[in-house]
Image (cartoon, rainbow, N blue to C red):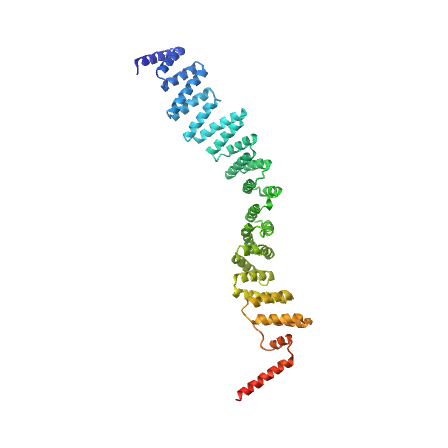
Length: 448
């Protein structure tokens, strides 16, 4: 050390021991001119000003000291110096900001956040809302899990008239609170969103999903209805999934049955609902929904799924005409002739047994086109001819014969052919003559 510098230090030390602080300060100021970067000298000058109750000068020297430490990247020393400044000047925003940034650089997020919050509160109290907002946004980036900061940010954004940003911040706060198990806090944040009456579709969708998580689904439904968004295809999908998850099958069916024809995105939840209804053996409800999804299933080329569901329904009621009609239509599209013929036969029999001759004829015609047995055409001709006869008893007898033939899987060998010929307008004499001629030809051939 320079002899002159050493002499000044010794002299300053003696003055301090004697309590002559002004004289000691004079010596240190001289030393500072000689060693301007000496942080010990700078710190001592600041301390002497404090002891002399000269707060203003003390702050100037401490500020110089902190900047020197920062320049040298001695962050811990700079942090300690800013703390000294804040003891002298607790509302010194510059020192608070510098301290917050130093904490952030050192990874002390909690301390940094605390400092930023104090600055933001001061700024809000001074009416500097925009700056306060930027600070709260910084805090939220610093600690995305802090629901309190999100709430405060939302409030400050609302105060500054930034409505859309405020609602997003309230939503973020509510989501964080719900994830943390603070349902009452999340509900309170949600009430702020309700108060602001959002209308933007994507936001409302996220909001509704939050309301589900905090057991406010009914309130959310009312809100969607007030905005007529419950008719929106995207929201219909969300609502259907909500109802299915809650086990509210009645509400789910009402929504899906009314919308799946025009909204293919509802097809998947409709299939889920069908599976649940079939599992509960709710036949009528299942059939109504089957009929609603039928065309969509065809358009989506998902006949296999529909057939599996119809097979399950058929196990519940194997003689249900509605089920058989749907099954035969699907099997025709799938070109499954083997199973199709069996279902068509059953369908024809049921329709004829119930006296529905017209539908029975149409189903029998389908059986002729797609079936494997040629005798079905004979049966169709029999019914067609019988329906032209004004004798109801004759029609009734023909229908019974057709039902019996379908059950047997073939025409009756004796009697039926004669009846069928009569139905086609062939006389008994013609039949007899024909048989006689055949017998004579047979005898003639055998005697040769």
